[in-house]
Amino acid sequence: MRFLSLLCVLSSLPATGAQSAPVPSDLTVQLDDVARVGSVMVDGELCRRIVTPRALKYMFTVDPRDRWLAGDNYDVDDAAFIATKKTLLRLSRLVPFAVDVNLWMPTEGRPDKIRVVIRNVHEMSQFWPWGALYQDMIPQMKTVLESGKRVTVTDKPGWISVLAPVFDSLGDTVGVLEVVTQTQVDTHANVK
Image (cartoon, rainbow, N blue to C red):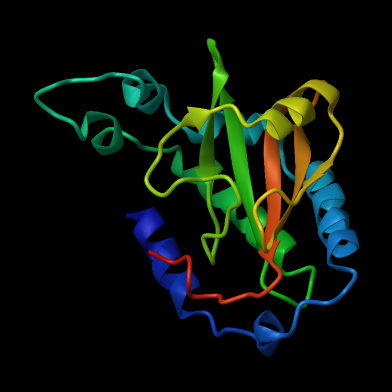
């Protein structure tokens, strides 16, 4: 119920004129700045609590009688999800053009898989296929997880993503932020 209330509040916020501004030429620099700040601001311990043990249990379960089993049993810890989502939304407003800051987390026991935990307002992502709960590890994300360094990715024409590490209090890299925009932004094109 609290999640639905948050969605209603967020959807009723007025769109700022800044979100429709043209994309500046120093786009990568600005995205990198947001990613750098995000690495400091996003709490790795909180991120680890977002997806519940129940959801993780069903994520890789295949039932021939119920093809929607994993999706129907995907739930989150409301407090951890909302706190992190708010931080990601604030980060996306550090620049005067449409940007999403998405949270990706590796899957324990499956180093070859990664999952998008939070997508944001415009549902932009250079990597996420619509509807996937998890997918194969993206090589650039693996680099960020192993090195703890930011990486800029422009593999998909018209897209720019800066991938940044999410750290826990011990300094371990536990997730990846995707700070992403399109060079020709249509803020409604990706919303399903």
